[in-house]
Amino acid sequence: DQGAWPGRRVAAVRALLREVRDGLAAEFRALDVSGPRGAQAMRAVAAVLLATLAALALHTGQPGWAAISAFRVTGADRAASFAAGGMRAFGSLLGALAGLLAMAWFATDPLALSVVLFGFGWLALFGVVTGRHVMAWLFFGITGTMVVLATLAEPTGAVGIAISRVVEVSLGVVAARVVAVLLRAPPGGPAGPAGSAWAAHPPLSEAWFADRWPAVLHACRGGLTVMLLPWIAGLIPALGPAQMAITAVAVLSVPAGAVVRDDRSVVLRRSLHRVVGCLAGSLVGLLAVMLTGADLLVWLLAIALGVWLGVQIQSGPSGVGYVGTQATLALLMTLIQGGQPPASLSPGFARLAGMSIGLLVLSLITVLLPFGRRRGAIGAGPASPREGHAPGHAG
Image 1 (cartoon, rainbow, N blue to C red):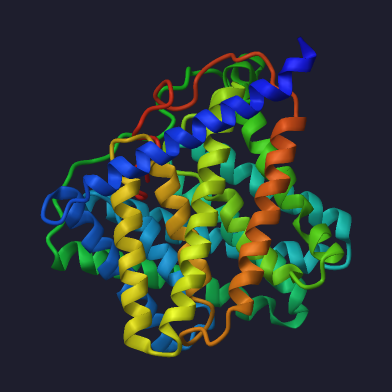
Image 2: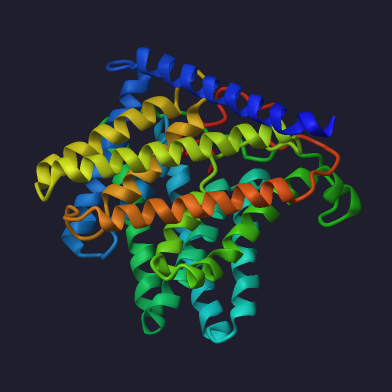
């Protein structure tokens, strides 16, 4: 019954919103101060603050990237943090070099740059879901995309932009490692490789593609969204290419070990978690900007509180961990805007607008791109409450 389709979709969205509300309420009731979750949250707070202060002291330009790097690398144990940190630094370095090469060859060819951006987005998302080194793939794509988009705004600053991004990522990695040692994170053990549940087929064979077809579609959706970002910036000058780099992070930041099935209900749930997290984190960040003013200590306290809550939600058992991940990323991108505490709400609103537009485009592409027959599951099986687990678990 085609007439009943919109009603069913609205009912499904309402049910998912209730699920998110109940999950968040359960997480807030179960906040952990002294247990394992509380300890992991405190390590994340310490790493983010250390990375932010180091980036401020070195005047890197965008200390927010150092903070995000520290947040994404901090894991539940020392082994997870170390493995994720090394892979993230390696992926960022390769992504920066690839972005520089792309701008050197295609800076004056918008269509070629669009293909390059699609490639960065596709490789990042496909690698995250099926590859052995999740963080390397993710930050190869994110850093390459950021270098290309930021260089569109500053054509003569490509090398400086690439160096700054690599330095900021490295600061986050180092901060997470230092904190893991000083705060005595559990040693942990060697992590199993992401994507190990995939069937072994000759690369690029028909069976290989058939087994990974849901991952191909998932990567195409993200790649198409990233490809469209500079064109969107051209239509909305207030955003600009540099702002679209922020949007690219929101689009590409999927949790390690994410489960993707070619199933509308699963994709709808994850899309809603992404939107709710981004909106909540951005709005809390804007409120914090209003309340903190230019006071450095109050600003750092706001960052610490936001990260602590976000990690608690992210590592909780209620099935809304991805909301916590996205909310923390959005809060950091809104609250850390430059080399000092933000003095104006305008940049924060611009970042919120950019992230919202990017996620809207991603949602439209997700709906419009056909869903094929499901041939296999990506990762370890059906979606679980742990799919939004702490960053850094998969290297």
